[in-house]
Image 1 (cartoon, rainbow, N blue to C red):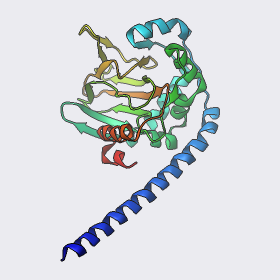
Image 2 (image 1 turned 90 degrees about the horizontal axis):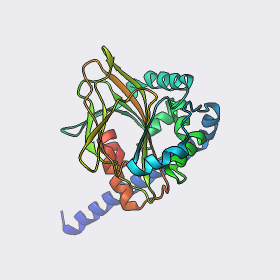
Image 3 (image 1 turned 120 degrees about the vertical axis):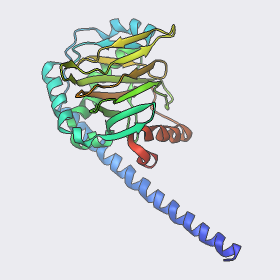
Length: 273
């Protein structure tokens, strides 16, 4: 084959791939627009009732100092029961991933939650919850974009050894970025699961938090080194994981890097979905 013909074939293949990619992106964009349009009705249908009497404004100084906060009994018992029931009903939808020495576990992605878990979706987008988090931070926070599958997810530890090792939650957005966790299930054969949330202070201290159900854990993940220790045999741990930021805009480069990061949770599909 002559170089001219080879170049023409390669150019045609590249053009075909680009066309297919653009069509895929248009389909995905239409899908995200459809999910966003349906969301307000879901939020109205499933209101969130905060149970804690802690005033978020009084907690802001603690959060500013530690970049971390844990609030027990965050929602009412009925609200927690509904979230827990929904998570358990969809446990088989978790996508499992394993990266040696770093993480092992299952994740139910944002897109899937849109379709099958309206109460979890409503919690993340609840104006009440967002106002509470904003009051603690001292700035208004917003949900991160729909295309970010980690914006809202269910972290599912269903096998012995499920964990995630020491890491930061990298900030891919223009504003400050916060992680909010609400444990829904934390069961072991004879009590709580063996998995614990741990963070390391600037002085090198390791502080441990028992992730009891309904304990809201909130931290600035890009500044707090943290991990979840391994689950034991027979353990079941499900955590509603959410991210908010003060400015959800990002650059094309940061968006590309974020997609690469998400392959750790959702496999290679994160690169194009």
